[in-house]
Image 1 (tube, rainbow, N blue to C red):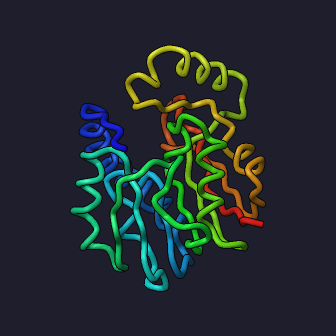
Image 2 (image 1 turned 180 degrees about the vertical axis):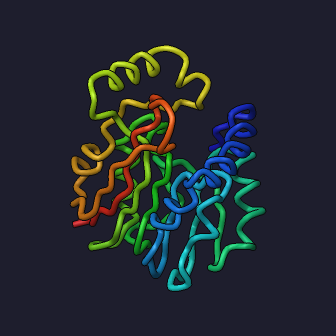
Image 3 (image 1 turned 120 degrees about the vertical axis):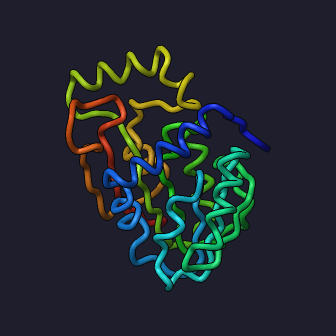
Length: 210
C-alpha cells in the first residue's frame, strides 16, 4: 500500500540534506554502528541512513511506503557499502517473514505511524529472539513548557503539514510496553543550538527483543 505525501516528500528530501550537514549524519552513523547480519529498516525515507551501515551487515531490507521517497532510497541504495533491497510496505505490515531479522532500525518514523503499538508489534515479529531494535526518534519533551507547545502543535497544523507527524509521543515508553528491554538510551536536543522547537527533543537507543 502506498502512502503518498507529494509536497512533504519533496520538502523532507531537501531538509534531510541540511539536517545531515547540521549534525544528523553523525546520529545516523551511531544509530547503525556495530550492527551485523540481516537488517530491516522501517520507514527508510530517502535512504539517508544507507551509507552508514557497517560492512558486517549482510543485507538491508529498507521499507518505505511513500513513492517519491522510496524512489530516492532506491537511487541511494547502490552507493551503500552493503547490499540493500528497497521495498514498498507499511510499518504495520512489513513484507518480512517472522524472526527473519537480526536487527530492526527505526529512524524518525514512530512519530508518524497511526499506531505505535501495532508498528512495534510488527517490528518484534520480524526480529529473532535476542535481536536488536535500534531507534532514533524525536519524542515528548521533559519540560512542562515545551510539552505544552507540543500538545498545541499536535492538535493544530503540525500533523497536517508534516505527513501525520506527532511531536508529543512518549516513544521510549511505547518501546518498553511492546516487550523490548531498552539497554542504551541517549537523550539530546536537535538541532543543538537555537530556540527549542516541538520536534527538538530526540532519543537514540538500543532495545532487545526478549
